[in-house]
Image (cartoon, rainbow, N blue to C red; front, side, top):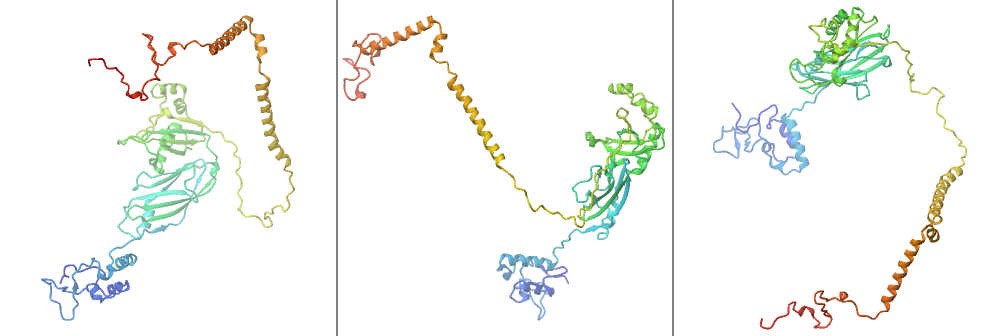
Length: 475
C-alpha cells in the first residue's frame, strides 16, 4: 500500500521512532504525533473531504501540513535555536550527505641523476588513480592535475621544470642539474582528482651526484620544429633522436644533456592549428669532436645562406626525417672546456658544540662622544657664518657709489642730466605759486567745441531730477 500524499519517505522518516525524540530534544513540548506524522498513518488531521483510507482504531492521524512546513512550536523558537533545529533535522533525516574529500599519502619515491645529463621523471596517473580508487571504484578515468614544489619552498629548483599538457595525460618533471646542484632535493608532489576533489601527496627524493666522466666538452644544440617538449621527454623518443643524431655526428657516446621548450626562450605560442608545434631545443653532448657535416652546417657560408632565407651547405639535414624536422639555421655547436669548480660552503648541523655558548661582553669601555658632538654642531654653524659674511660683503662692500658713477660718466651727460633736473624743479616751483585760472581742459564739464563750461556744483541738490535733455517751447 502506497503512503498518502505528503507522507515523508526515506531512510529516516518524520514518523520514525527516532524522529520524535530528535524534535523533542529540540524544544518541542506537544505530543509527538502532533509534531510529526508517523510512518504508518493513513488519515489526515484535521480530516479532509476525501481521506485516503479510514484509520484503524488506535492508529494516529497524520498532520495536514507538509513535512517541510514549519511546526507551530518550531515557529515560536528563536533564530539560533531554529537554525540548530534545522541542522539537526537535516542530519537526522538524511536529506544531505556531505562527503569531504579524502587525502592520501603515498610512500616516498627515490630517484638519482648525474650532473650534465637530462633528468626526467614521469608522474604516472595510474599510481595516483590507485589511491583514488580505494574509495571510488568507478572513477578510473578522472582527470588528474599535479602540483610540485621543493620541500619548504614555494617553487621548484631553478634547474627543474614541470609540464602537463592535459589533465588526462601524465605530468613530467625534467631538467639538467649542474655541479652546484649536487646533493639531495626533496620535491613534494600533490595530485588532484578533478571529479571528487581528492588529493594524494608523495615525496620525490632526487639525489644528484657528479658525473664520472665530467661534463662533455663537445655539445650541439638542435632545434626540432615539429615537436612539443613533452613529446621528447619519454625515453623511447629520446633514443630515436639520439640514433638520428649519431648518423650525422658519427659518434656512439652521445647523450641528451637538456631539453628546453622554445617558449622558455622567448618563442611565440603557435596558433591553434593542427600540426603547429611549439618547438624544442635539444642539447646533445659527446666526448668526440664534431663531424664535418655539422661543421659545414655552421660555417660562415652556411650562415650567409641562412641570412638569405636559404638552407645551409650541408648534406646531413635530411637524416632526421621523417620523425624530426631540424631547423639547421638554428644549429649551435659549443666546445666546453672543463674548469675547476669552487667548492661551496660546508653547512653544519646548526647546533652549537658543547661549551660553545655565546657569551656577551660584561664590560663596555666608555666612549668620548664630545668630539663627534662638536663636529656635528660646529661644522654647519661655521659654514653658515661663512656664507653670511660672503653675502654681506657682496651686498654692502661691493656697491659703486655716486662718486664712482659720476667719474665714469661723461661731462656732457652730466650737464644734460643736471639741466633737465633743474628745469623740472623750476617748473614745479612756478606751478605752486601761480594764481592764473585753471585750464579749461581740467574743468569737469568742459565742451571742447564751444568752450562753454558749466559748474556741476550749483543747482538742485538732487541731481537725478535734472533732465538730460531740456524741453523746448512748443513741445
